[in-house]
Length: 230
Image (cartoon, rainbow, N blue to C red; front, side, top):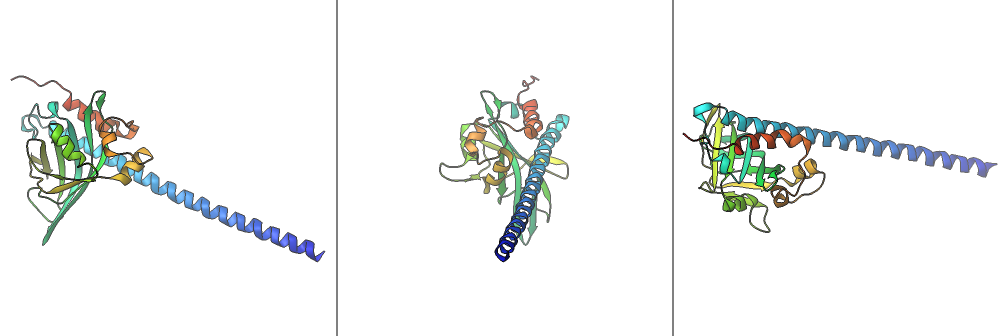
Protein backbone atom coordinates (compact mmCIF):
# COMPACT_ATOMS: atom_id res chain seq x y z
CA UNK A 1 0.00 0.00 0.00
CA UNK A 2 2.80 2.35 0.95
CA UNK A 3 4.73 1.45 -2.22
CA UNK A 4 1.60 2.14 -4.27
CA UNK A 5 1.23 5.62 -2.76
CA UNK A 6 4.91 6.34 -3.39
CA UNK A 7 4.47 5.31 -7.00
CA UNK A 8 1.44 7.58 -7.33
CA UNK A 9 3.35 10.51 -5.78
CA UNK A 10 6.24 10.02 -8.22
CA UNK A 11 3.81 9.86 -11.10
CA UNK A 12 2.16 13.08 -9.95
CA UNK A 13 5.54 14.80 -9.63
CA UNK A 14 6.50 13.68 -13.13
CA UNK A 15 3.18 14.93 -14.49
CA UNK A 16 3.58 18.26 -12.71
CA UNK A 17 7.14 18.60 -13.99
CA UNK A 18 6.00 17.78 -17.52
CA UNK A 19 3.31 20.46 -17.28
CA UNK A 20 5.81 23.06 -16.01
CA UNK A 21 8.29 22.18 -18.74
CA UNK A 22 5.50 22.40 -21.30
CA UNK A 23 4.54 25.86 -20.08
CA UNK A 24 8.19 26.99 -20.19
CA UNK A 25 8.66 25.82 -23.78
CA UNK A 26 5.31 27.30 -24.77
CA UNK A 27 6.31 30.63 -23.25
CA UNK A 28 9.66 30.50 -25.04
CA UNK A 29 7.88 29.71 -28.30
CA UNK A 30 5.49 32.63 -27.84
CA UNK A 31 8.40 34.93 -27.03
CA UNK A 32 10.32 33.82 -30.13
CA UNK A 33 7.24 34.25 -32.29
CA UNK A 34 6.65 37.73 -30.87
CA UNK A 35 10.28 38.75 -31.51
CA UNK A 36 10.17 37.30 -35.03
CA UNK A 37 6.92 39.13 -35.80
CA UNK A 38 8.47 42.34 -34.50
CA UNK A 39 11.54 41.88 -36.71
CA UNK A 40 9.33 41.10 -39.73
CA UNK A 41 7.28 44.23 -39.05
CA UNK A 42 10.40 46.41 -38.80
CA UNK A 43 11.75 45.03 -42.07
CA UNK A 44 8.40 45.54 -43.81
CA UNK A 45 8.25 49.14 -42.60
CA UNK A 46 11.81 49.79 -43.79
CA UNK A 47 11.03 48.29 -47.20
CA UNK A 48 8.02 50.58 -47.53
CA UNK A 49 10.08 53.58 -46.43
CA UNK A 50 12.76 52.75 -48.99
CA UNK A 51 10.22 52.79 -51.80
CA UNK A 52 8.87 56.14 -50.60
CA UNK A 53 12.37 57.66 -50.63
CA UNK A 54 12.83 56.82 -54.31
CA UNK A 55 9.35 58.04 -55.14
CA UNK A 56 10.08 61.35 -53.40
CA UNK A 57 13.28 61.79 -55.41
CA UNK A 58 11.72 61.01 -58.76
CA UNK A 59 8.39 62.78 -58.20
CA UNK A 60 9.99 66.20 -57.81
CA UNK A 61 9.56 67.17 -61.47
CA UNK A 62 12.43 69.13 -62.98
CA UNK A 63 14.24 69.25 -59.62
CA UNK A 64 15.07 65.55 -59.60
CA UNK A 65 18.37 64.74 -57.96
CA UNK A 66 18.82 61.68 -60.17
CA UNK A 67 19.10 62.80 -63.80
CA UNK A 68 16.88 61.15 -66.37
CA UNK A 69 18.53 58.12 -67.88
CA UNK A 70 20.64 57.23 -64.83
CA UNK A 71 18.07 54.89 -63.30
CA UNK A 72 17.06 53.54 -66.70
CA UNK A 73 20.59 52.22 -67.17
CA UNK A 74 21.15 51.15 -63.57
CA UNK A 75 22.45 47.68 -62.77
CA UNK A 76 21.39 47.92 -59.12
CA UNK A 77 19.69 50.38 -56.80
CA UNK A 78 20.30 50.51 -53.04
CA UNK A 79 18.24 52.69 -50.70
CA UNK A 80 18.91 53.46 -47.03
CA UNK A 81 15.97 55.36 -45.48
CA UNK A 82 16.40 57.52 -42.36
CA UNK A 83 20.08 56.73 -42.02
CA UNK A 84 21.42 58.36 -38.86
CA UNK A 85 24.39 60.70 -38.61
CA UNK A 86 25.93 61.65 -35.28
CA UNK A 87 28.63 64.31 -35.47
CA UNK A 88 29.19 65.48 -31.92
CA UNK A 89 33.00 65.54 -31.48
CA UNK A 90 33.37 62.23 -33.33
CA UNK A 91 31.30 61.51 -36.41
CA UNK A 92 29.46 58.19 -36.43
CA UNK A 93 27.12 57.08 -39.18
CA UNK A 94 24.99 53.99 -39.55
CA UNK A 95 21.94 52.85 -41.46
CA UNK A 96 20.01 49.89 -42.80
CA UNK A 97 18.54 49.49 -46.24
CA UNK A 98 18.02 47.24 -49.25
CA UNK A 99 19.47 46.66 -52.69
CA UNK A 100 17.86 45.17 -55.78
CA UNK A 101 19.59 44.38 -59.07
CA UNK A 102 18.40 44.04 -62.63
CA UNK A 103 18.18 40.42 -63.83
CA UNK A 104 16.94 38.68 -66.97
CA UNK A 105 13.58 38.16 -65.23
CA UNK A 106 13.22 41.65 -63.81
CA UNK A 107 14.43 43.18 -60.58
CA UNK A 108 15.75 40.86 -57.89
CA UNK A 109 14.37 40.34 -54.41
CA UNK A 110 15.69 42.92 -51.93
CA UNK A 111 18.99 42.20 -50.19
CA UNK A 112 19.23 43.68 -46.66
CA UNK A 113 22.34 45.83 -46.18
CA UNK A 114 24.12 47.88 -43.52
CA UNK A 115 26.09 51.05 -44.22
CA UNK A 116 28.45 52.82 -41.83
CA UNK A 117 31.26 55.36 -41.74
CA UNK A 118 32.40 57.56 -44.58
CA UNK A 119 31.32 61.05 -45.56
CA UNK A 120 27.67 61.86 -46.21
CA UNK A 121 27.87 65.57 -46.83
CA UNK A 122 26.88 68.10 -44.16
CA UNK A 123 27.14 66.72 -40.65
CA UNK A 124 24.70 67.81 -37.99
CA UNK A 125 24.28 66.11 -34.64
CA UNK A 126 21.55 63.47 -34.77
CA UNK A 127 20.65 64.26 -38.37
CA UNK A 128 18.75 61.67 -40.41
CA UNK A 129 19.66 61.23 -44.06
CA UNK A 130 18.03 59.22 -46.85
CA UNK A 131 20.61 57.64 -49.15
CA UNK A 132 20.16 56.34 -52.69
CA UNK A 133 22.96 54.46 -54.46
CA UNK A 134 22.75 53.78 -58.20
CA UNK A 135 25.12 51.12 -59.55
CA UNK A 136 25.82 51.83 -63.19
CA UNK A 137 27.93 48.88 -64.36
CA UNK A 138 29.23 45.41 -63.52
CA UNK A 139 32.26 46.80 -61.69
CA UNK A 140 30.00 48.77 -59.37
CA UNK A 141 27.86 45.67 -58.83
CA UNK A 142 30.95 43.70 -57.78
CA UNK A 143 31.89 46.54 -55.43
CA UNK A 144 28.45 46.43 -53.87
CA UNK A 145 28.64 42.68 -53.37
CA UNK A 146 32.12 42.88 -51.86
CA UNK A 147 35.30 40.95 -52.63
CA UNK A 148 35.15 37.16 -52.82
CA UNK A 149 35.36 35.63 -49.35
CA UNK A 150 34.63 38.93 -47.58
CA UNK A 151 31.40 40.43 -46.28
CA UNK A 152 32.29 44.11 -46.56
CA UNK A 153 32.67 46.48 -49.45
CA UNK A 154 34.18 49.95 -49.13
CA UNK A 155 32.33 52.34 -51.39
CA UNK A 156 34.17 54.94 -53.42
CA UNK A 157 32.10 57.58 -55.16
CA UNK A 158 32.84 57.30 -58.88
CA UNK A 159 31.16 56.57 -62.19
CA UNK A 160 30.44 52.98 -61.09
CA UNK A 161 28.34 53.90 -58.04
CA UNK A 162 26.49 57.21 -57.98
CA UNK A 163 25.19 58.35 -54.60
CA UNK A 164 22.48 60.82 -53.62
CA UNK A 165 21.21 61.98 -50.26
CA UNK A 166 18.21 63.81 -48.87
CA UNK A 167 18.41 65.99 -45.79
CA UNK A 168 15.37 67.95 -44.65
CA UNK A 169 13.68 67.49 -48.00
CA UNK A 170 16.66 68.55 -50.14
CA UNK A 171 18.14 65.98 -52.52
CA UNK A 172 21.66 66.28 -53.87
CA UNK A 173 24.66 64.24 -54.97
CA UNK A 174 26.78 63.18 -52.01
CA UNK A 175 30.17 61.70 -51.25
CA UNK A 176 30.27 58.20 -49.75
CA UNK A 177 34.04 57.71 -49.89
CA UNK A 178 35.14 55.33 -47.15
CA UNK A 179 31.66 54.08 -46.30
CA UNK A 180 31.45 50.35 -45.60
CA UNK A 181 28.51 48.38 -46.95
CA UNK A 182 27.91 44.94 -45.46
CA UNK A 183 25.25 42.33 -46.01
CA UNK A 184 22.83 42.06 -43.10
CA UNK A 185 22.75 38.31 -42.60
CA UNK A 186 20.35 38.44 -39.63
CA UNK A 187 17.74 40.44 -41.51
CA UNK A 188 18.15 38.24 -44.60
CA UNK A 189 17.50 35.19 -42.43
CA UNK A 190 14.41 36.85 -40.95
CA UNK A 191 13.14 37.98 -44.35
CA UNK A 192 13.73 34.68 -46.18
CA UNK A 193 13.51 32.17 -43.34
CA UNK A 194 17.09 30.92 -43.75
CA UNK A 195 20.57 32.14 -44.53
CA UNK A 196 20.73 33.31 -48.14
CA UNK A 197 23.98 34.56 -49.77
CA UNK A 198 23.92 38.18 -50.87
CA UNK A 199 25.00 37.29 -54.39
CA UNK A 200 22.20 34.77 -54.78
CA UNK A 201 19.62 37.38 -53.80
CA UNK A 202 20.98 40.03 -56.17
CA UNK A 203 21.31 37.49 -58.99
CA UNK A 204 17.57 36.78 -58.83
CA UNK A 205 17.94 33.27 -57.40
CA UNK A 206 15.72 34.05 -54.40
CA UNK A 207 11.94 34.39 -54.44
CA UNK A 208 10.90 37.87 -53.35
CA UNK A 209 8.59 37.88 -50.30
CA UNK A 210 5.21 39.57 -50.63
CA UNK A 211 6.28 42.31 -48.21
CA UNK A 212 8.90 43.51 -50.71
CA UNK A 213 6.53 43.93 -53.65
CA UNK A 214 6.11 47.68 -53.10
CA UNK A 215 9.84 48.35 -52.92
CA UNK A 216 10.70 46.31 -56.00
CA UNK A 217 7.82 47.73 -58.04
CA UNK A 218 8.83 51.29 -57.07
CA UNK A 219 12.34 50.71 -58.44
CA UNK A 220 10.95 49.08 -61.59
CA UNK A 221 8.49 51.94 -62.11
CA UNK A 222 11.29 54.44 -62.61
CA UNK A 223 14.16 52.24 -63.81
CA UNK A 224 12.17 50.45 -66.53
CA UNK A 225 10.50 53.47 -68.09
CA UNK A 226 11.89 54.64 -71.45
CA UNK A 227 14.14 57.66 -71.48
CA UNK A 228 12.30 60.72 -72.78
CA UNK A 229 13.96 62.63 -75.56
CA UNK A 230 14.18 66.36 -75.27
